[in-house]
Length: 152
Image 1 (cartoon, rainbow, N blue to C red):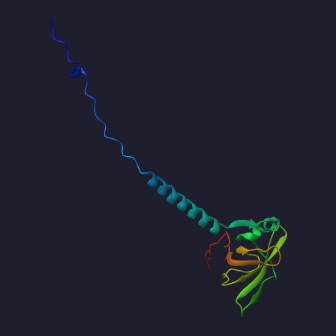
Image 2: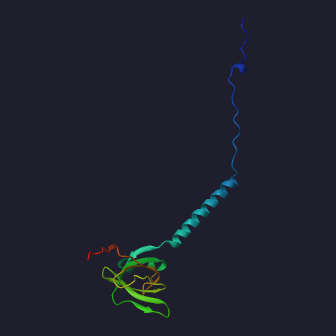
Image 3: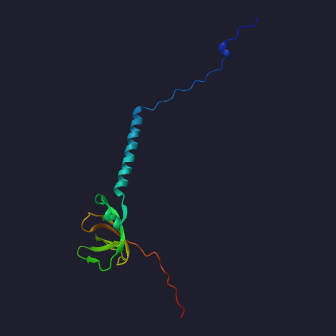
């Protein structure tokens, strides 16, 4: 007769898995709160520094441009530049698509600023009166011609 087999010896040994460590719920809440704060700060900072770029006709048709800072592009009109050396300010008009916009600016004026030059002004527009610019940028001509010496 054959001896009875011991079932416990023939069964494969089960490996014991270590118990999983659980992350405390307070850590999860703290992580979500920190992530939310970071997302809010990024959003708030990008919205405060965001500037919309418009043309003169677009600015005249814009209904919600009063509440935010905008950039407007246009060409400085002939005989419109008036300088005030006491307050270091300049007022001028820019035009685009046969629509003009009066602009006032206080600060350093670029060297190439003159009638016929395309400028970009950044500031606030109240809807009536001149555009109050905090920044004045004059665009350089797109074509520079190199001077070639002539043979004499």
